[in-house]
Length: 346
Image (cartoon, rainbow, N blue to C red; front, side):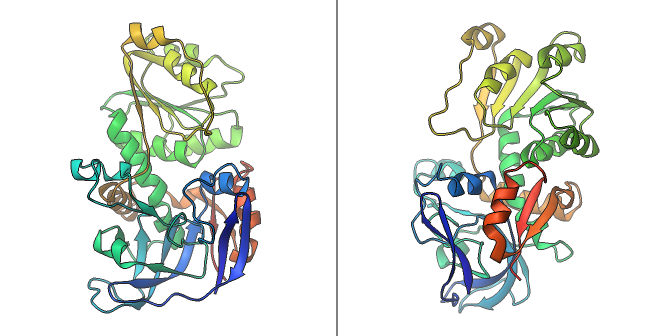
């Protein structure tokens, strides 16, 4: 079968490799879609290679149809549409046993240490099946929608940290796929005002169609003044940083009200530093959290929300590339022209 193989930092090669076969306790999926993540672009540019095994098939936002069921597997049949949590937690480390399996220190990840979804077929190994991160999806969904449960699950994990309350004003910095998911989730959580900040006019328009009550181009207007103007001078209850740029951190602190919650959701480059005014945290009594990854409960909830039509991920899927054009697909996903790219094998 064809597969996109990580050949070292900055190297992605389309190769012919052996098609997987389901052993005991395993299943094989015919890949229906693997959506492209910003991390894939960092891998392709050579900015990320730590923790990724040379020779592994890339791709961690995976959905597919069961093509083979190994002995002893129950609950799955050939033809089932399946979504996959990319992280296989150890369930034994300090974090796993305390209910934070998304912070597992000994996890294995599809596309990093386990062959991922940028291929015609993907093996779901026994440990992933036994640890419960593989889910039958609603059959009316497209594979791309199911694959997008992965980023939505991460957003739900972030929401558990910043804890939006009914009536809140929420500021989201960035209208990429993640920012657009945060906008929808926060409206679902009862936020009264959802402000999305992004320089792109087209992205701001999409944000408005997905629940943003207000949008702003931060290059043309002062973001803090804009937010204060909507909140009687207080600032936002919640600010979510969805772009990994250090200068946005202090801007987030400035735009938050006293006692507000700021969430650093985006991943930042390895050596990125942010210059901040610590008095904004001190005198403002800000609560600052991060968000990394998602656990099984978040992924399952994401699939339920998508299946019920409560979160629209279908509109986020704007472009499709074949596996033969996987490099072009990943490069296009970084251009900002589309929203979410899906790689779908021919």
